[in-house]
Image (tube, rainbow, N blue to C red):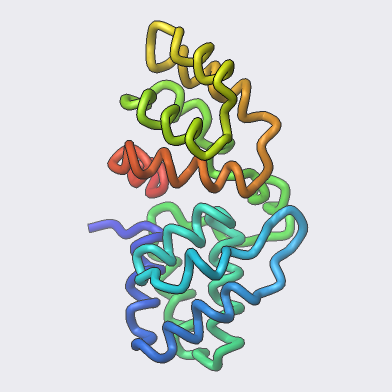
Length: 193
């Protein structure tokens, strides 16, 4: 059986135990991330379990940089053994990309931007996504109507991506969460690939 980076992160976070996992979440929120990245909001981390935290790390920081952040946070809370075990386990992960200085520009790209083509071609439920985007004021009534008027899911997603160009990281995080809410199997598949 092959494991993904997400699987390895979850398994190693579970080894922290309740007290150390709480410390990990707190330190993860406080960790000074680089460049275009932003810290994961405290509210999202407070009640998150190991699965949720792994998803948040990979969505916020992508594969190579998310691994770097995780390892640094583990070391800052004196969980060096788990950090070493995580590094060893990651070498066996099917989609692991070892961090290097050349990875930073690609790593800065948000999940919804990196997976644009797949999200356009594979998205099934677009209308509930549009409803949530409208209720969160990420789409205007006019943009909502324009996107809804398109005939296919693919056309709707293409149009939606046209409007999403102006969104910041927080808006894209909200878009990601909405996509995950309404198309969870697809999002999980894309995160693992």
